[in-house]
Length: 491
Image 1 (cartoon, rainbow, N blue to C red):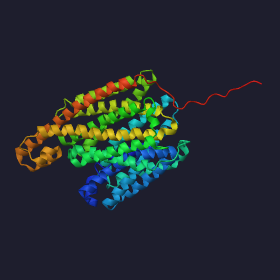
Image 2 (cartoon, helix red, strand yellow; image 1 turned 120 degrees about the vertical axis):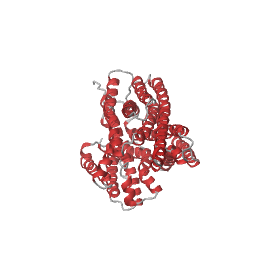
Image 3 (cartoon, rainbow, N blue to C red; image 1 turned 90 degrees about the vertical axis):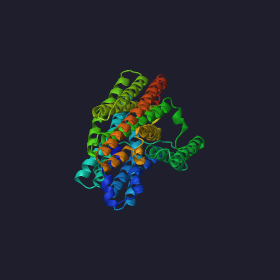
């Protein structure tokens, strides 16, 4: 749990540090974007590679090497004296994070051979990962308020030192005993497939359907086709096609992707709603955003208990999607002064989605042999990265389209593009003109959120039907058959 918490926190730990970093290091606009995004891009691009390497060299070894790299990069980032140094440190943090995430989930697969214990452990894993993202932004705000911006990175050092000291004694080593040769060509192919797609679909919500981003996604998809062809034809592929032949693995990856789509799609609106519509400060918004995570800690254990008591997993997962759809349904009736309704909706969505994610991870890991656990974990997490980016892109695009349609024709081009631009312009206008523009922008954004929530509700209801159909006939199985009992003969 310890490295997973830090890796998930680092996704959001710069939320409040960016203003101080900008004032201190004076990065250009492009450099500032890379300071923020480099970590997530490298993490997503290397997940599959690191999962495969962990299966070969040992998950504990990779975990400890990654922890050392993560700690060293945190130290460099904390004392970076130029934008280039900070960007490079964030890249190394992404490499370290890519070693840690699949290793932790794969080690759960090997540590807990009892299906019931494994389900509980994966439920805790899912809750920590989700809660870490919310906690990272709050910790960032507290540290920046009392210390300098580098402190948001130094907080990683004691935890990683503890992991390096105790890991060799408390964590068992595990690896694939017969991994075959490592396919080096698959590494650049996987990165060329993942990074352009992630980049393109992450930029579309804020920049629109620009030709550059559409081309980026297209290029990524072409490399994805080459990557798939390589995995089908290589003698020792990085991502064995046999993984997807296991009953339940492909549905688990697809449904996990849809759950990440819904989670990140709702977060795109609720975070802006708290700050820009309700006018909360960044710190206030981050603290309020912690409230919905209370339900997350309950959802996964309850789901695991239901499955252990004999409730068909298909119905538990379908119910999780329906529960999350109810949260989106609550957003469809939110107004410009509905903080408690939006927070409750965020909590319901998060609880439903974590129910689904924990069950899909348990299903996927339970259908693959333990020697392939790292590779399987990396596929799940890469799919989740795609799902989150798609959720922000598609639901964000719906919200943006409605926002532009609802804004008055007299508003300037910038004000018609984003709520942030409209509020900034409103502050410069005198009296009623500024108030009128700000009010119109908040109404338009809320209408966009409502429209996106309708789409999210329909998608989750469809996902519920898909889960009930595809998972109904699946039964728990053990992909690691126990060795046959010795045969005794009498002479």
